[in-house]
Image (tube, rainbow, N blue to C red; front, side, top):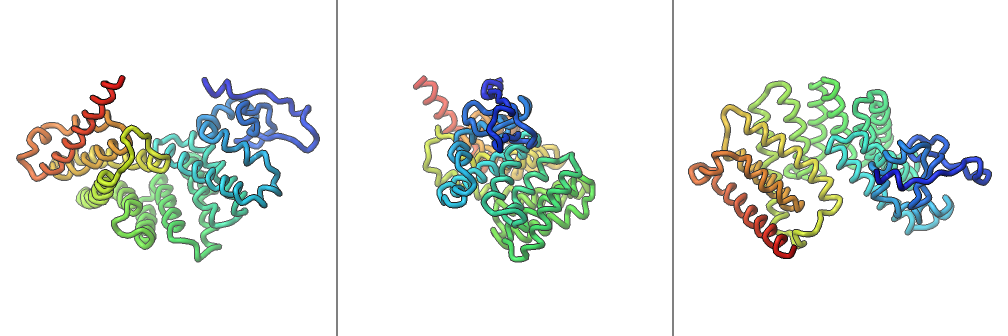
Length: 358
């Protein structure tokens, strides 16, 4: 494993007095250090490997100038504070993307570092720590006590700051809703998701992609309750919002299709891809299939994959559409399928160009 070659041993007793080093993940006495940055330490190889996979590989060199400074100089250097804020954002995006992929254990190192850096910048017991608490609560899914502890800290921080932003409120209710879904308390989950949608709508608007995630989570609860017509209605709204958003992105995108997506887009793309695939599977399994609804969701998936540079996924998405794609001119979904075909043409041109230059 590549991570194993990135660590070297240290001897705790050989360190100067007052220069003890502690594990990045568990804060126990360290016996290893990252041989690349030399400012990050671990108690054992298992924690070094977990941190490398979770976040450290992405931020190794970014930590060097930050951790090389003393705490006093950290407070006096605005540039360093900017670097720490950049580190917080990277950790948040990485944790978010791993959680979207269902990799809860891998998300823990990024979420933990996000919290520590947030404390360094904003201080303890501040409302700015709430996003990190919520990431840690979700990363500890399955560890009920730890999850409840982090959610309680988030709730307490919000209660102490009644004027905190609407975004914090919507994030808190979304996390609480997920917790109650996991616990099987569906009615309380619906109440929290309703609050999530309310605050998200106030902050971002009714047709925002942020708000649409609340619709999707609420639809998941109604699915469990067997309220299928309501699920269809909510899924249609989610598909409409994302179709409009992705169409605009596709029309205004200026970068080369060969460029990899930025972190923020990738983190969102993973979560949205999972959401749209769940919706597509639901629509395709419905006994009374609606080709128009299927086409809209499939088109969203194709556009999302195209924007992310995953051209094979574009082809795979269209290949799963079945007979209605071949009969596209015979139903009201024809325009959507035409858009999908347009994306396929661009995708095939990309592969032709790539094979030519290789």
